[in-house]
Image (tube, rainbow, N blue to C red; front, side, top):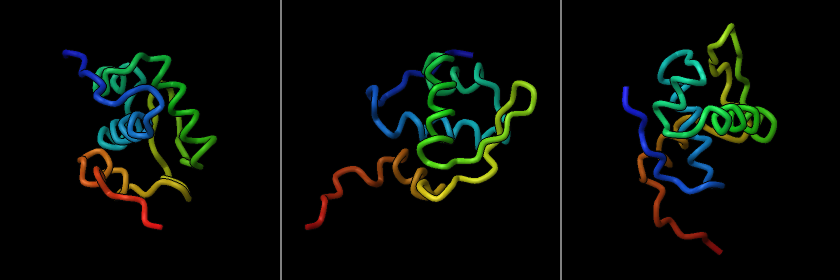
Length: 96
């Protein structure tokens, strides 16, 4: 399997969303699988999994070497993550 290229720069929230989406779509995935799908290093994938749990309250279960999203938490909505990754939120202005 060819490793994908990550289209989002370092620090972009969509990197974390890409990792969560890869875990969710596989209904349980290893760090190596997520790394291949997202194009991120294994260490970056691991760091983003921990950040999602600590900073956004995403509940992730690790069973052996696989991860599974139990709850997207209070900050991130799955539907919103899908919109962000599909580009549908691009260009929306901040309302004042």
